[in-house]
Amino acid sequence: MSICGSIPVFLSRFRFAAPANIIRKRLDFLQRHPSADVLAVLFSTHFANMKIHEYQAKELFAKAGVPIPRGIVVKNAADAAKAYEQLGTKVCVVKSQIHAGGRGKGRFKEHPEQPGVVLVKSAEQAVENAQRMLGSTLVTIQTGDEGKLVSTLYVEQGLDIAKELYLAIVVDREIGLPVIIASAEGGMAIEDIAHDHPEKIFREAYDPGIGLQPYQVRKLCRVLGLDAAAQKSAATFFPKICEFFVKADSSMTEINPLVVTKDGQLLALDAKVTFDDNALFRHKDFLELRDLAEEEPAEIQAANTGLSYVKLDGNIGCLVNGAGLAMSTMDLIKLHGGEPANFLDVGGGANVEQVTEAFRIILADKNVKAILVNIFGGIMKCDTIVEALLGAYDKIGITVPLVVRLEGTNVELAREMLKNSGKKITTGMDLTDAAKKVVATLGA
Image (tube, rainbow, N blue to C red; front, side, top):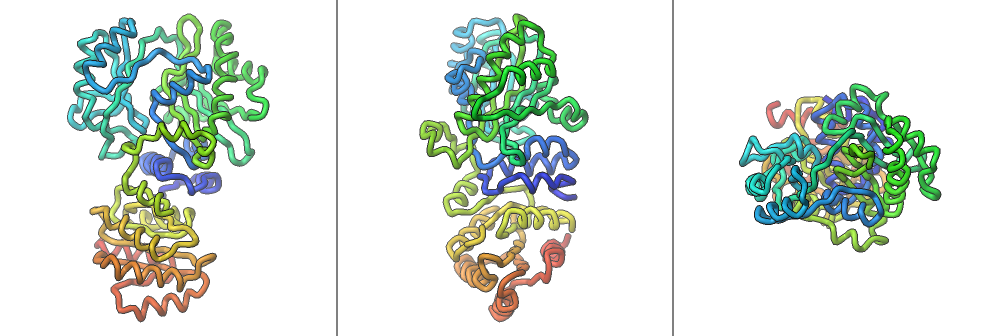
C-alpha cells in the first residue's frame, strides 16, 4: 500500500526541507489513514517548522489579544492541587503537554485507563490524575507505539460551552496566501469529519498585508452558525488570530476546539502553533520555547549534519538524495512487502562525512535489517556518490544487506566502481528491481 495514497498534492505542495517532526506526523497519519485524501489536502501546506507546547502557544495568543481560558502550568502533583484551587472553578481540565495531537483519546502505558486530558472536580482529583500522568508515557495516534514522556501539565479552568468549532490557518502555497480552514464541527473527530464530509470544511484566503476583512468575518460567522453575541466576539477574535499568524511567521496555527461559551464569547480551548524555521531569525524569543526533549535525538543529530531524517517503524533503512525520490522509494518498498525504517534525504551535495553520518544514523536504529540506497546523480555525479558511499562503508563496517540503485551522470563508471569494490553490495538496475531485492534479503 502506498504511503502517499492517491494524493499528488502531497508531493506538489510540501517542501521537504522541513525538519523531521512535521514529516513524521504526516507519514504516520497517512500510514494509518491511507484514504484520508481531504486531510492530506488540508494539511499539505505545512512546511519547515518548529513546534511548541499548548501552554506556550496560549501565552503567545494572550499577548496578541486572542482570548484564552485561564490556565496554570504545573510540574508536580502538589502544584496541580494549588492550580485547581487558584482557578476557582468547579471543574478544571488537566492536560498533558506533549508535541502530539490526540491527547484526549490517548492513554498512558503505565496507566492504561488514564487519558491524556481529563476533567477534575476537586483538588484531590487533580492530584490523583497528575500523579498518574507526570513521569508516565502517553501514547496517542500521533506518537506511535513508543509514546511520549509527560513532564509538564496544564491545568485550565472549566467553561460553560455552547458550541465547539474548528479553526486553523496555514499557508496555501499554490496561491501564496494564508488560508483559514474552519468547520462548525470541531473537537476530537475533526479528521473523520474532514474525510467523510469535506463539504463541512470551509476555506477562506486573506491578504496578509491588510488582514482579515469585515466581510470575511461575516462570512465565517455565517458558515459557523454564530449568533449575534458570538458574532460580536468573532469580530475581534478572527482578525486577531489572523494577525498573530502573520506577525509570528507561523506555518500553522490550529485551534481545536475553538469554543463558544454560553455567554457568546469565543475562546481558544486548545492551541497548536508551529513556526517557519526560515523566519526564526526575526523571533529570537521563540527559540527559547523549543523543547528538545520532544524531538527524536537521531533527527536532531541528522539536522546538525545537514540531513533530513525521520525515524519510522520498519526494518529497511533508506538513504536517498531528494525528498520526492525518498517518498517514491518508501512507496516501492511497501508495494513489494517491506516496511521502511526511515526517511533520509542526503540532499544534492552530500560528501563523505554526510554519507558516513547517514549510515551511522540508520544503523543506530536496531530495527534496521537491510539498507536501500537510491541515488539519482544530477548536481552530484554518481561516481562521486559511490566514492562517498564506499568510504562510509569502510569507516562503519556495514554488516546488514546493502542494495544500491544508481541513475544519472556517470552511472556506468559508478556501477563499475561498485562492482570492483569487493564489498557485499547488491546493485539494482532500477527502483523496482532494487526494492524487490532489498525486501528479498529479509525473506519477505
